[in-house]
Length: 109
Image (cartoon, rainbow, N blue to C red):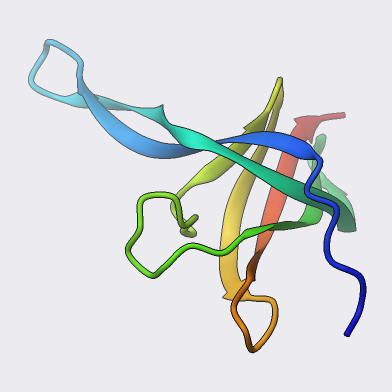
């Protein structure tokens, strides 16, 4: 078994919300769901049409299926001004102690 992940980054887990726009429609925004400690490691990156996209692997402590603290692909992590949109979530080991979140960080080049 390898060394445990270094969960030294405090990340804010955010979920999408709909907010009425006053004209019968809505706008989409983000609401905080809680803070988690994680390890963020770069994976791959690319630059397309002036928008850089960096793949990252974020490891956090596991939470049961359906728990509000368990990240899902419709959510994102915030680290200050940096945003990581979650693409997929899986258990990191058979014991299910940690979750691996494959995410994408976007930013203008």
